[in-house]
Amino acid sequence: MIADGPGEMICSSKGCTAHALHRIEWNNPKIHTPDRRKTWLACEEHEQTLRRFLDARGFYKETVPL
Image 1 (cartoon, rainbow, N blue to C red):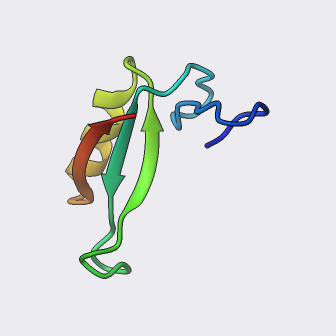
Image 2: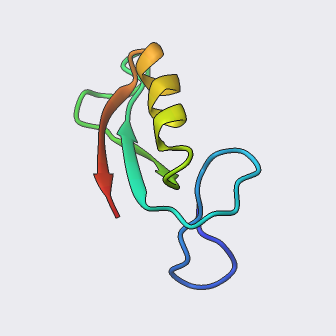
Image 3: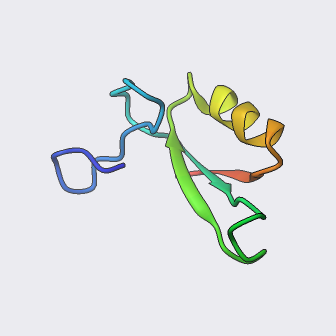
């Protein structure tokens, strides 16, 4: 998600307005090809929560710093 300012990256967690520090890569194997990657952005506080949500569903691939 990109905020109002150009290049300002905001956490994808619902209601969070913190600057993102991580890029969480994922895909849903039921609808995406194995090489397809979707991205969520995460602040330090929400990276673990978002990663666990995706991992529990088998969607999580990796987290990389922005």
